[in-house]
Image 1 (cartoon, one colour):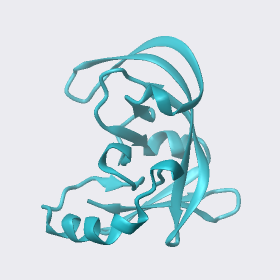
Image 2 (cartoon, rainbow, N blue to C red):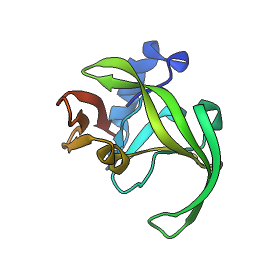
Image 3 (cartoon, helix red, strand yellow):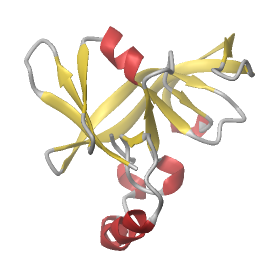
Image 4 (cartoon, rainbow, N blue to C red):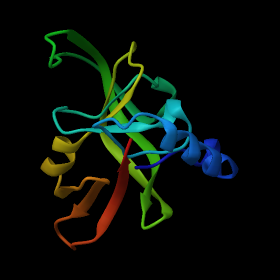
Length: 148
């Protein structure tokens, strides 16, 4: 869906695309693209956006919560806040904000909750190639991701 402008690797995109084509296809969607550590994976089963990168938060409030993952593993959330990102829309990066993102100290993947986006007024359209998030109020595509 987006990436941090300061970490943009536009010159490397072509080679990364070629590498990605060679990788085995998986049933997850990349919503954010920059470097592997900044990639956000869309998860339709996740109840919240989650990251292990405390340094990314523009706003942050400490609060402890617990979540159980699909495999019954306990995850402790240490806080929540907003993260400034860039979303891919029709081949162009657009600035935006992921709101109410959970911080999990041991998180190694950045999870984009499709359910949280739907609760906040977006419609998710999944295809064999990717995902589009559409604002229900104006019908505009606000973010796109491709299957990885």
